[in-house]
Image (cartoon, rainbow over all chains, first blue to last red; front, side):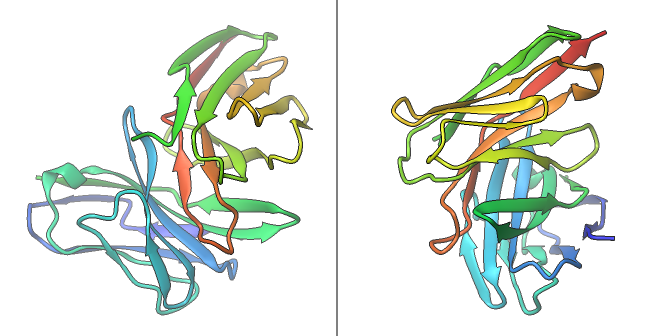
Length: 114
Length: 114
């Protein structure tokens, strides 16, 4: 089954404790992204990657890091989480065909930073 | 600064009615305009998308109308059904080759009353 998986799905942590949210896709997609979703703000792109070892900042990259060492994995790293990073996070992978880009989103990771 | 402005924030429609959600953008470099549907507890899913070379695209009960000169696009859901009750997001992007950055609207919560 084609899918994007994220782990963990729920996470409660404390300010300053480094954490990693994993993202994996089994569709051999080149493009992957991370978003955060906050009430009233919609989805905002944090980082995106066009291929292995190619990453770029999205709209709200501050406080986040990513890496793309393998095509299927795109982990999101919070080196020193702060309460304003409490949010719902989505990973997505996408492909382009016939001028249309189809993004597949993971199930989301709900993060609470105390 | 919101790159894509979406309205209304919430919408209530009778079953069988037409739901209309509007979006506006400023960056004329955007050349790909998708709409996403999100059910509670799930990630967004691509619903329909349009490129600026056409003014309308229809897929089943869902239609995108695109007005390039006004920099506006809208989603029309014909014969709205209770199963359409969800949050809808518009988005804008510049098709890859120059990047994979997506900008989302703030979302519209649609409720279809039986």
